[in-house]
Length: 373
Image (cartoon, rainbow, N blue to C red; front, side, top):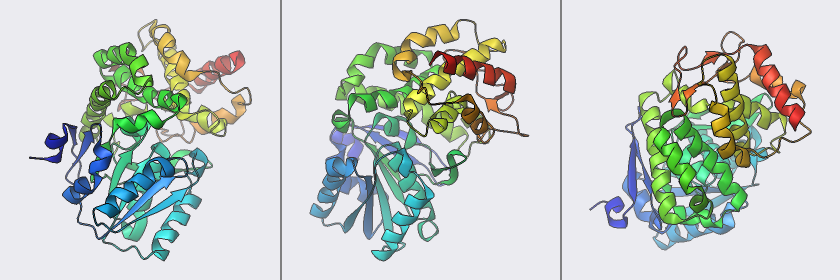
């Protein structure tokens, strides 16, 4: 009997060029970590990487269960927050691993939110030219999105996630019981990505999320297990079809062209979920004005997304947002491209799943939003 069957966990398979991996979702999985690790990786040592907020809550617990099982493990931490997702943090962590004598028989265990899964994954991708990583996400954002798909990386001055590598994990272990330790605001940030999955891929999933938002914000583990697994399944299908983002995977960037630009221009004062919620609303508006998105789509998204979006910081200036549009990963020929809905639950295919949007239109939509801030 597999561990998934023993624990009642939900298993989602993600296929990749490296052979694929499982995402396990279920209460209590953190305590089963030693068995899960030994199932997927033959490692002599384990480097747990966690941020300064999560380490006392779950990093120490992961270290304890591994050591109690007789595994050689050590905990490495970095300051919490998006501001730490940098090449400097990557350099510090890799130097610490080298100083501690970790070799090619090591495995990185990333315990934390999206910043941790991205940063620790990038450490694993580049350390000694690549060692295994197991992702143990502790937030909705990381469980639903950041830990799944093999993307790793750091932010740079020019924008978010512009330096990184594809490095699929050996396993993703999502224990919804840890969500209760998150502040309610952080729970809300992560649920935006689940709503995005529904908005681009599955109207039913979107509507179920809307109905269960209160239970999810209350961290109900039964409801969370079901909807996290559903959302991961949607993303897994996209990632399996286009692992390296050469086409179809771009649909997952709905809301991210304008959202990332706003997030970066705010100096990351605007949370990722809030930024993506704004991006979804504004890109729905762009799609409607271009005659691609069904009229009224933004109006239908607004009552759901506005509470997550909140207010834009008054410090964001239009002139600071626009340069980030030109360094977005989807830029082709110097022109910004955006993913546009046909309607809620369906993306318009455009050209390779994105559209070249007139810069003057993007500027007008952003200006109107900032003027209302």
